[in-house]
Image (cartoon, rainbow, N blue to C red; front, side):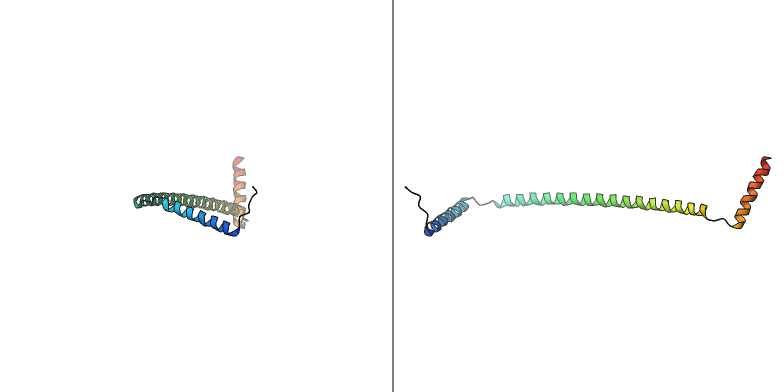
Length: 114
């Protein structure tokens, strides 16, 4: 017996039967209990609340770390500026009076050693 190619009507009939069987199978399922649905919903909401809380804690920790880093950078910048100002004060050219006072101090020290 040779293989018979199904006609268009045969394929439509098979598709209709498959749809009918799927519909019957779906209708055969017992209805979901409202109490079970409410319990599942409550569990899901609790899980979502816990996730939101964890996200908020993580964001707060990240913000705190950023603030600490910014404070450390600001402190380092202020320290560098103070050191630069101190160095600039040391390197600024002395006035004539300051040069004379320094020369007199060296002269006095030399005299005191003799």
